[in-house]
Each structure stands twice: as structure tokens, then as C-alpha cells.
Image (cartoon, rainbow, N blue to C red; front, side, top):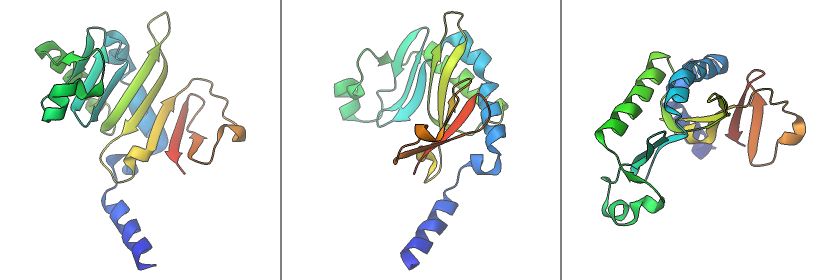
Length: 169
């Protein structure tokens, strides 16, 4: 029992900024960044063993400065090139837009676009907390989530008619 209590206290200590926001506020803050995401056609952004990666209209960029393995292997990611000044600036612009809109920090983001250039699907994984990598906010307009969409390892619930929240269960 003491171990479980300690884990609960540890998880609470590592909670993210998103804990102080309602789920609806979180998805609205993410959705408010869609104009810049659509303008730059950002398909993926995140952090990993090799640091930052960023995929958008100008190409696929990877920060290879983290360790020797990343430099030798390209982080195991195919088709990426090292960040240039413009890629860093564009990534920073997106991060600034997220911050301006009150969005929690991100571990990972990805999006798909329709032929009109608008976001049709997106996934945002908040960063920062002990449990945050097990939570995801998914933009899926008109999702029609039902009980059958749930499995034993990944739970989902609707936030509104266009957004879902998923987590490891």
C-alpha cells in the first residue's frame, strides 16, 4: 500500500500544466493554432532521443546534436536533414503560437490535411509530466465514438463533437 501511495504522490508532483485546464480549454487552445499549422503544413513535430524533429512544407528536419548515435544514424529516421535557421525559426513560431493560445507544452504533434489545405485529423501529446506521455488529444471531426472503439490498452472519450481524449488504461 505504501508503494501505491508513493506512486500517486509522485504522479501528482509531476503533473502537467494541462491539469489546471479543462479538457475543452485544452482542445480549444490546440485548435486555435490550426491557422499557422495549415499555413506551414506541419505534419509532425516532436521530441525524442535525438532531440527535436519537425516536418512541414520545407522538408523533414532533425536535431542531430544530442549524441553520437544520432549523428551516426540520423536517429534512425529516413529522409531527415539537419535543422537550418529557417526550420528553427518556423518551429519556434509554431511553439510561440501554442504558448500564446495557452496550450500545454507538447511532446509530439502530427496532422493530416485535406485537399483544401485544412487540418482533417490531428494528434497532440502534452509533455512535462510523469503520466503525460500516456494522454493524447485527437482532432477527428464528427468522430462518432462508440463503446466498441475502446480496447483494453487504449481508452478514449469524447471531449466534444470534434475532439477525443485518449489515454493508456
